[in-house]
Image (cartoon, rainbow, N blue to C red; front, side, top):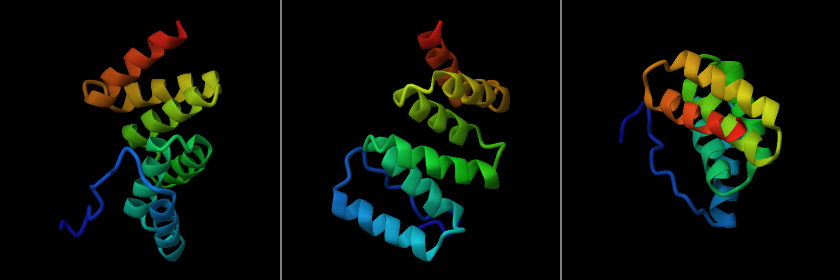
Length: 114
């Protein structure tokens, strides 16, 4: 397991019990960006959009130049009906990841708002 990125086994569906365990791990390590990212994505993947937004905001306070954080918070905002916030973060993902996969995905998502 890579010491810098130990958490790479994201699941698209996670049981409530497993989410509780992840939240406990985050509570024990609130400043660990890798755990924070893992828990945010887990909530996002399990339609816990409000919690995902909360956690992605914390991630963006720590790493405002990470395109993936902007991309996923934008998706969560879109799912909750906050379309202006979604647009803002998709545009930021494009700016930060000009030719990368998050830029491409964000451009596709912006078409939903056209």
